[in-house]
Length: 197
Image (cartoon, rainbow, N blue to C red; front, side):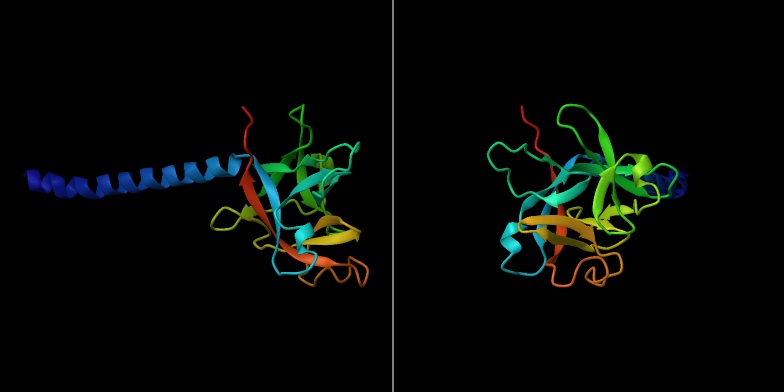
């Protein structure tokens, strides 16, 4: 009799154990995605200009994102992009938000401008009508993807000023930047923000 009870109960116990394991894995994934991270640029291909981009954080400037280049003496320091995933309102996908003030808890959405393909930030009203997601990350949870792939580029708009773009059409931004403009393919790494104690 006890053998029969054990045989009947075993599938239920295994099913419950599997459900608990899956719930814990999902909870761990969601916790990781909710952590605020600094975004770090890495060139995919070696180049002479890569040292201006590699291992540098992305910063917010005039509603756009750039590779940090350091602030000259007396110039205001740029704010690092510190983003995390959040469902975009009224859309079936996750968006990405970033803090836009070092003092106040004000957040902006990250989005790709449909006309220029620049990575921009702004309030929801600014983001609507542009590419707002789905933002995700690679299997190792280290690099940011958009619409299922890593189409990130930086464009040297002025000497030493590298603006972040997304190569929506996978054509090296041919119709978006002037011929002869330097364009480098990058990966954007998510690096957990360190809290100062």
